[in-house]
Length: 456
Image 1 (spheres, rainbow, N blue to C red):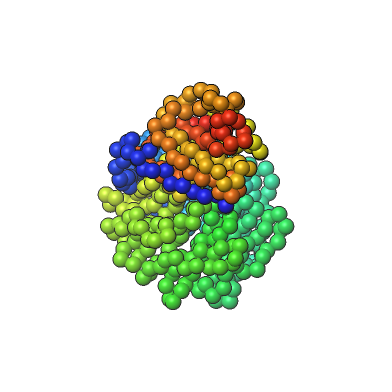
Image 2 (tube, rainbow, N blue to C red; image 1 turned 120 degrees about the horizontal axis):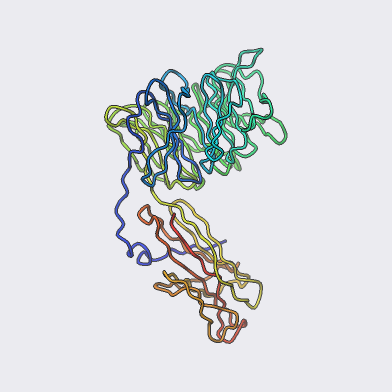
């Protein structure tokens, strides 16, 4: 078990003035209809549809202040029923480079790097394509040529092989498939109610219903980024309610509802969920784990929220100057961490550094086989390489401006958590751990590699 330690706020937050981040409008003059913004899990990329003239086109933008880019011309992107729908007609790969949409010609895969736009299926009626995280394949719904039912199909993003029909005899209504890893989540009716199912692409098998008693209407089900939970909506007490189903325990938890309308929930990789609520007026609410309203809105209508892997970026649509536009809230920028220098040799095992992000925090840690020992975390803005007296093979790799003493856990691990902020874009620093190891050398100190951090 790793024991987290919070870095004192003076180490980072006192170094720069940190103003509260406000939502920004990402699009303008988008025309009638819905925008359906989707956020790439691991890139600063938000895609949406807009109607600059007589037809809908696909747009993408970063949130760093650069202008939006129009990706299609004359595509006439379909969104579902007329100009408005709830389930997004587009999807985006985790790295933001591959997008999928559909129009009268069929299902398209647009590769931004290769500058290609490929029709991979002739399906054009409520296709709602959903890409895999790596952009290599996608699922969509289409009519079964024999029964006429909406069914789930799988096709590769290059369109080199014909689509494969995954489901049969699914009955009425939409399937709204969602692909994550080798699992395809979709809905189909069970009696008079709509329930969620998973099709396993490895074994080519359909599992039993994940949900029961969910009521009428759509479930709008999505996997979380790791595929370990399903976020959906169900009818609870005559009210559409956002739910989270833990796939390990098969435990469903209600997290929020409203007086009317769909919740359209989406979860990140760290247990946060965004949804729209109509308790007072449509809003995008972040459960973390308590409700924080991101936008209460000034008029009615769907917000259709989307968020990245750690909930650091939230996008939604909202009325602005008489049209629906794309809004974003940048809660934090991700961090790029690299190592430099060489770690010393402890009396047993090794000293290794690690890092990961969770919600708005960057975690920096050290892993040893020394058990519970003292350790020091040092942070500064200048790298160096100075030998440590009495500790051959160990180096001081950062000139510290702040340090923190901590204890490793029984497994010899410790970590600190640094709160990230959108105001820290472009901010960099260096850090290093040192652990106390009396048998290792005369100084009784073993140093780790250095960590170079850039908020990107």
